Image (cartoon, rainbow, N blue to C red; front, side, top):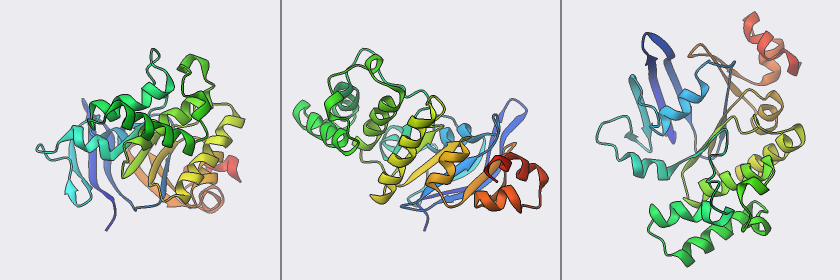
Length: 242
């Protein structure tokens, strides 16, 4: 059974269907990549999965439980489904260590010492211990991305959702993020990543899911989508990977 099962997911804003009957599975240990043009519904899909946005209809099942049900404990759910935001969402007035320990202390009830030990473990995992006393303004974009990932990992989630993880980064830092995601995949961390970055997608996933106007149009290798897919519009989107 898949870790996450999405069936007939619809999200409407007023009369506009941003997601229109999406069906998708996320299997434990995989990196699921969703691509599509701006406004296609990629970020909305992620936000529905951890209930930052309420779906209009359809179901999302996580570990066999329908999490779109009104009885779902959303606060507990978000501890199991980590989220790395496009602009990192770090607290500017807190140092790196405090950004990570805050959730551990407030949500998990950990002591300050235990939370710091856990945070330092995750920072070591991402080669960021030496920056633990620095503030977000003192970090590069790639370093901020690592801190955001460390914060998500510290909660021991079953899956991490990544929203356009390279959009604010230069090409060198983007490659580093790809390497980091592959390192975590090697440690069996389940991830779902939405991106417009063809280079990143090709580096972290064998197959990508193409979302267009809220509808899944294809799921294949980038090479197939760019050169052999029957739909000219799909080939055009992936054409620069040819």
